[in-house]
Length: 319
Image 1 (cartoon, one colour):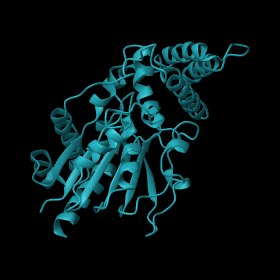
Image 2 (spheres, rainbow, N blue to C red):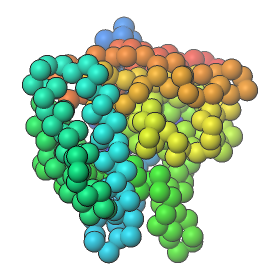
Image 3 (tube, rainbow, N blue to C red):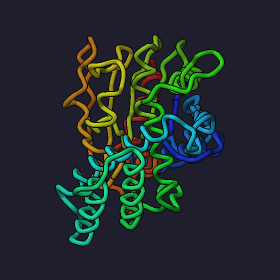
Image 4 (tube, rainbow, N blue to C red):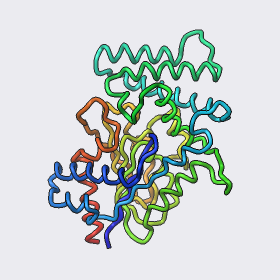
């Protein structure tokens, strides 16, 4: 029996799951080739190596509150959380800006997020966040990530993380948005056999929380560009607390790029506790080409990412 390979996406607009699955597999195949696994490239792309699934939940964000309507009671709170996230990300980047011009722009964005003497009411916070987002979009490449054509769209999509962590918006069954998202991932997993999980961005939070209640075997969990290191907004809101490696995970590799503005503090092993088999996350830095490195395909095409995934698939097939 082939092992299952499950991809879990992050924030962004609507997408076609079949198209995304093909794109992620092709990026993984490029990385596998670079890692010396050329003989498995066709197997990956054609789906012969693993039963590949794309756990899609993006359509769930099109429900109540998805468009940032003024009557959404959570909109202001979510925007405030986005502002705290951007402030932490800016401070992290200011510690080592790439250029003098980048440092100047980051300092300007920071001043917009916490203007001296300005009102900090929720309405004013929203305006400050939008102003800072507009400044950050001037950073090389940031506008191209996720099709961010403007500050409003950038904040709206970053709010998806806040919406998930707010754990509100119950449906007719009483299931909150975060629970409905985790159910989508649960449906993609295979409790009867080994499942390799590759998660990106918000999907890393979704995967961690889902795997804590999952009873199937996970020989490898790979997280890419995870925001879990964001200590003010994300880290304290992830469940269960304290953060711990799920018991079914045999190995956890966490990859981050220094130029990934979304990831924040990347070394998860510094604050995630081991499971009862002493498994800890192992964080590894990658350096991608291009001006914006957060997209999943950028990570998957890295040989250091694709190599362990292919090897885990081969080991699970043999077992």
